[in-house]
Length: 302
Length: 266
Image (tube, rainbow over the protein chains, first blue to last red):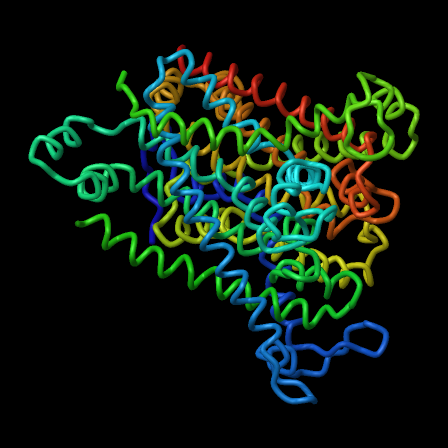
């Protein structure tokens, strides 16, 4: 192809020259992302088919054993341990997302109903935990669930736990921690949509005697879909890989896939297996995103 | 302004309490003079003074700051250049799609996968150079990798928002490339660049997983220190440290909000 002159936003140049300059600008950033994001990703895939040596070193013999192990097959027969952990991670991420959404709607309506000045204050109050380090927030639950605190005392009084013991590590503590960790991730994007709701539509629905449920599903939900979908993705994906909260509040009793991965790269020093679990998590995340995107589209057109 | 049902108000206040109760609890017990246990024994600031005598904590604080500052500066520069390169040139649909996917990877994958990938990659690179021993350099590289994508996305949306009319006018008046970048584009982009940089900085302070996987024995940061300390049991000193980190977060958030709001009004 010849290179005719072209006018590009006031600049007289040729296509080639323009693209050359563009590539020069793309290069540093893209080089970085390819070197430290894309290539490590491929290496992780390759390593998931490698073998762990006797001292934890990598041995380059091709095997699918890591994936078999993840699926539960071992020398001693089939166990559901790892699959259970994967399944549990999906359930925890799903419930966390659901509870966060349910709690976020009233909160968003509440904030949107304030005067402009106090609206910013309430929003800032939601943003602060959003940006507070997760370790600190998980640690804060440690304190609240300690045996001396009223919640643990109440639970002990009701007979859920023996007197004088803390309310962790268990599933309840993990859920508390997870929801408090991810709630702002739903609230903030959702609020951006709630703020723009056309309330005339909601009122029209009410005037036409729609039940509250129909008002929500047909007048509120479609209008808040954009923010809601961002919130759901922002919660579900990191919740799947979360490892701080289950590590601190769930302990060995309530392990999630994040802990399993960490274990392989930490104390067990089994990189190939860790890589295989990471691939499993990756696939689960992709499936989750995919199902969600299909469902999301259907909802949008109702 | 719409009036809210009282159930909405009650639920919202409960949710806010749920978010803040643990944080307030930590702050309250950080000024409690009891050494052990959670019984109120009177007000004290001793735990805060002791923080500044603890060499480990001071070093962790220093590492946290160096990590956040260095990675933010590099990520902001790289991200801004990348955003300009992506938005201001006539790329084909394919190239654009490819760039878009790469840029969104750090946003949509669980961070533990990026951490695992980096551990493995650094492990192999270590055979080539000792630069990749676990430690601060690796942590900085890891942080830049996810910050870069976020900065580029923020700056790119600003590029779209400011449009191209001013640039075109500058070209019509015979501005050179360099002059255009320096005197027209960068000043217009500055709010976006600063917003991206602030986002990158908070992301770095907020990160635990990437740091945890890539850190070496000499490169403890505050979140890593707190995580390790919690497993040995809760102490008033850790309450105080956590409260300080929370206060810094609050200041950063309020500053960022002020900044973006004042820019919106302009």
